[in-house]
Length: 412
Image (cartoon, rainbow, N blue to C red; front, side, top):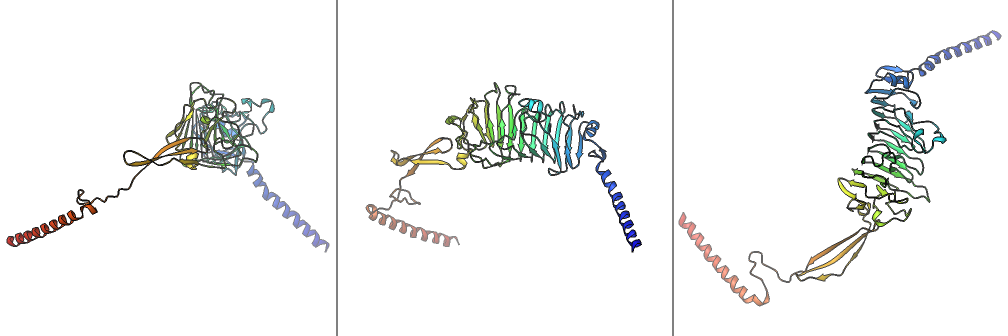
């Protein structure tokens, strides 16, 4: 019995050692390459970046990545980073915990791509924070495709920033993004999950230096404003400091806006009627001054709807789309030309826009005009003459008919 027990213990020990040895290659493999350029693997992201030539595509594995304060060489390079999916690859923008001593400055931003050309991110989650002035500082162009962006960002491409099929998850009660450093910013098939604010169309960095264009196409906004809070339209515009330049907002395609109140309907603060956009997609921030100073042009599906500080077309407004009109009708009045008209007044419930039209109707005539002979009109007064006339026409028809038959017979 003792020998059998000893053998069983020895067998269990050998089996445990075998299993432990079997696990060793797996652990070693997990500590291998984390980034690849083609078939070449690198054990750190910065090593891959340092060895990358401009135009290279760097494939990332599963896990968390960042170049913040890693000293990687990116200046002058166009680089594309491709992850394994938004649920598998995460990229940290800036410090994990921003320095509170630097709040309100750009120095919490990420200088990883200072002086770089075009930087592209695909198939990953980009993680930012909730304080101001975060993002990638002084990159030439930025392109984000099929990604998720958590948090708030200010800095993207200094020439242009393009977001395609990207989901923005904004901090509660705050913006997802500012149009801060990019002369052209494009949102194409993007989704914004917000709670009161989405895009802040404002800058102090580049104000008065050039026109700033925002292209917004085929996007979805899901608003979930906390109870008791006031929401804003998707784009909150303040053009007060643009000098001789303008914001140019181009909205196109099929855009869905859920859970967002049309401009001024939330009654956040008193607004002059001339400042009300009548839109869920854009509004002007006049709470602290002249946010609507005439330096913004808004085009919806190639139709200019806002220019020189005022609405120039109501046709693409939410008031028009929702048919939110109060309509009043005037009295019918006879006109000298035999018609009857009345005035119809429609007032938009969202913005006060007033549209006046005139309806016209023609009185029904009691006479019936004969189609074949407009001069012949049937009436009691012409009854006898009508009978004589029709009798004469019938006789003429019979005579003519006989002549035609006779002519045909002779022709034979």
